[in-house]
Image (tube, rainbow, N blue to C red; front, side, top):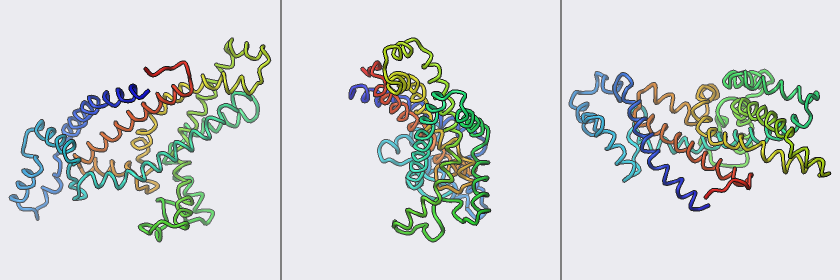
Length: 323
């Protein structure tokens, strides 16, 4: 197992190099220039512009800019400089990364904890009233955009006299030290992003879990297990569910980056301090190094997610061996 994990990490190195090259190339192909908004300011003298361009390496060929950027990452952990925020990119990334992990992790937990049991129940009670209700909820969750769900939840809270909408904390707790009151305030705010962002994912997993389990329950080995007189719960959870859940675990690796890059509009609507709105602002401001670093982190999270999915598959299905 350890040899497999070590090999996977070694395989990540050439993949991350390739992704960094592609990210740099795509950003360079966009019209305009990194820092053009700052350089075009009439208050900035031409001498200052030239000095900044030389210090940041913008007067060098593209391949030299890339090599300089990669060298800074490897040797100093320096991901570049943000013109929009006038701060190092590493500081900006780590400030947002914590809340991004909290929101994304909570959303994944919310999605899977609800979707898997509901999908199993719906499959084992096929064509019952509960199955129809859960199927209807699944269609609604898939069809309604996340940002519209966020707006709807915010409207419902405000119409009922609530004030805990937008952001993760009330005004008085922003920047305040942690306390029980601050944790309670966080819980009052975070349920809206969890439902708004996690509903679509939960609906998709629910529907796929139901379909997979219905297919497995019709297999001959399941009928044989029942014919042997095994308890129905043993047949379902030990034999059927363990096979039906395998495709869902394979999807897990794609959820980590998707929750960051695929929910940008929802995060903007909810005013969340996560990487999504940060990435959008960086694109608008042509903040080259911030955008490239974000793409690199998204790719790295996808690779880590795929590794976790492979390990979970080996844990759930003993037939899978990671040699």
